[in-house]
Image 1 (tube, rainbow, N blue to C red):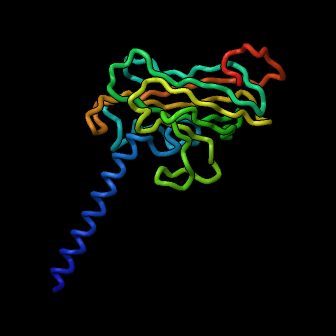
Image 2 (tube, helix red, strand yellow; image 1 turned 180 degrees about the horizontal axis):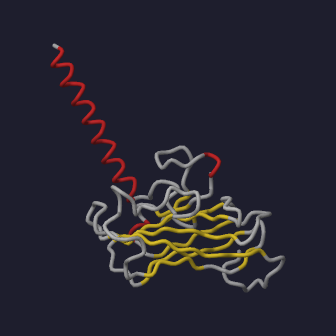
Image 3 (tube, rainbow, N blue to C red; image 1 turned 180 degrees about the vertical axis):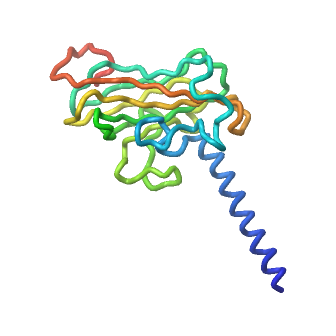
Length: 203
């Protein structure tokens, strides 16, 4: 009887573990865990043990970048583009956050379409409630793209410069973490009291 109970318990644990693994693999294709941008105070990137660590960070031939204006208006939205160029990967992904000069996470991200998502707090991605709106990443539909556009609402008051930190995955699409290149990049912005309405990125 004890042997039967132990066998059943072991089977249940195996099923639970397998379910978690499948869920984790599926979830990461639709966006990585929180705090993986490579920014100060983040966990790091997905170029980690047990993840996409086949190659050294930033060792691929693609160019991963953040495009946007050099200035922002406090309290207003800014349009930002994250992209890969020169990539040979089948799938792509990213995660981004913004920090002020004191390494405080600032502003609020907003998605423009279904290709990106603002990470929700307290779900399986592990974002703290205090960081709501502070991280944005690709979705399952978005990992078929190599370019994403998002909005960021600047804080009313912050210590400049604001630095955007992003990590990107140039993936081969083999349904496991091997053979993928992970990149990091940054972009700085400073506040201005007034700008021309034609300036790129302001909205």
